[in-house]
Length: 417
Image (cartoon, rainbow, N blue to C red):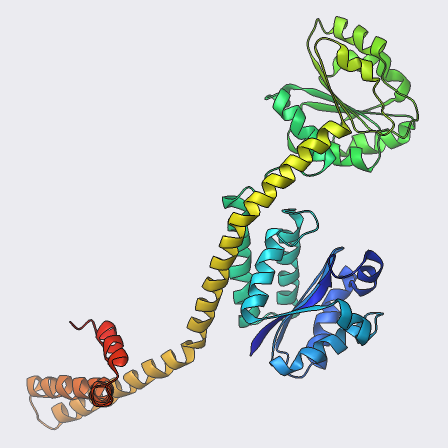
């Protein structure tokens, strides 16, 4: 039985194709049952389906690769020929290495992104619940996820922000080491500002307020974080209350003016305000940056930080690849050890049978009148002879055949000088 990783991702297929191949979350369980039923030699299966990839991990006969491709083409709106042009195939060690790289974020569109590890874990858990996760893929998930966790904890692959929302909050954390005591004002309620609010909440900022032209949108976002909602016009009179201001609206003109900030700084008695303007066109007048006690960053400033952090992630990826290799080697060793379990059980069962045979013989002798000492001595002698007979023959034959390698191995096994 071999391990297969088969699929498509953001490198091999455009978004419109990935959308067609992706499985809806509520259809994955049925898909797992279907692939096991329709691919005869397949015994185990896991399907990973995200916005950037659809992959099948399977334990099956190597000759069944085309059957997996045909199954995927039958169940998704894509032809086999089209699928063949964009799909990739990895077997055994390469499949293991691929899974670890995926789970670590090394194969992600955004290098080092953290969500994929949870998605891989969820995919394997769903396969377990569906009954399509067996010993082969269970071992793969154990070693793969453990190695991916090492990559994330032992390297800097995911420690530097690579989104403008996260970078903005990270910059605030550099200026204010005590974010737990700071108040934040978010101007705008779009998708970027939702991400900003989430990151601020994770950093346990003291409080948040959302200002937006449409008050209902501000209220909806503020409610998620126990925050305050206000209309955009209220910013001028409320700005002095906030230490951090992050703005991203669709306005064609600035919504925060120099005169407004000057007044706020006077009311704050020169306590600084940190501004991040994520909007294009800008929401904060550039002249605000000339004021004392004001720190103003634009999206271009953050882009430089993000590029620097991506370079840092790329450097960390070199260290991460070494961990991937270690994880792959560990998996292959564990798999070989698992494959030897049947032989080990057979060996132990044989020894147990000999023990029982000799024990029963000794008990019969004692019942027939042989002294216990004599019966026990005979049991020990006979059992020893029978247990050492196979290695004795092996040593004799290895010596006769000049197999020094086998002799050295037997010496190591039996700890002989």
